[in-house]
Length: 196
Image (cartoon, helix red, strand yellow):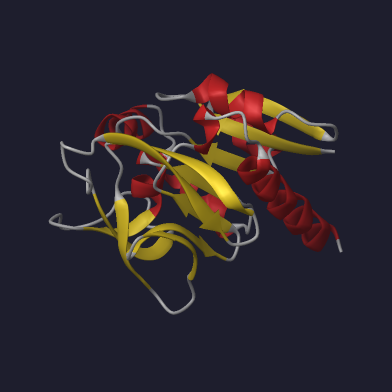
């Protein structure tokens, strides 16, 4: 059994909970810092990254979230969650949690294409993954320890750095649970390593 939390300060929390629910997985809605101690993995949902950061600071989550990731526990960020994880944000002096060695650009797809859906090849997940982009960021560049798992055209939209996973779109807004199953597998593997 693994326990995975969804950070519930703002954003699409219930949708992630639904996608994570599976045999052998306990899902927790995280509203208090002390809940982090009992988790094996954590999801940062989409939402509005500036608002999420303000709430992270307000409720004392900043250092505990950094410590959680530093322990090697898997973290999965979607859309705004991806922005929270990035070391660098285009046009800004610094990132938020600065967990992943990458630069992201907010609202990268512009107003004409603010919201759209497409099928993507995502390494390790599938070659027909339905991706819902809503005012989506994109990953401009990644460090050498970061693996690019998917692109939309020439743009990086999914990346993994060891136990950290980030994507530009919203896999939780479809009925396809393969992306979340991929993250659950990351959590199970990390827990096995931690216990060995």
